[in-house]
Image (tube, rainbow, N blue to C red; front, side):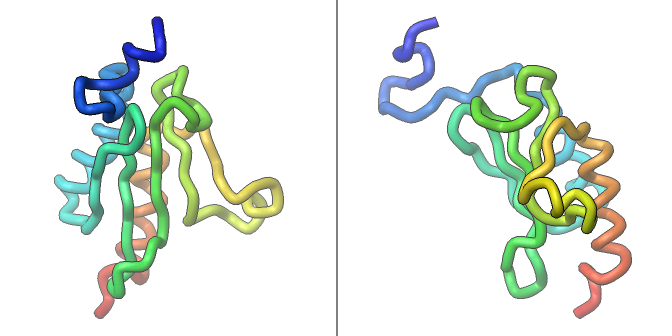
Length: 114
């Protein structure tokens, strides 16, 4: 693969079709009616889970620089446990189901109140 294979004719990153897990997360959140935004990010995707005032609670990414990309797994920032926060600001190698569980729990406990 050459560097030219990463870009389209407009100089933007091409989306890598091997990143499927992040799209599973988008669908799970959509099906559960949990507010979020899914957008292209580098050669992959970012799912943004906002607070009621549109600040980031958590985001999940899958692209060329994310932890877990080679295994089609996700990296998150936000909604980490206290123990996880002691090691890093992000956590990688998570499935869509694992990330969805964190978001759903937050949404049901506090995210959808006001």
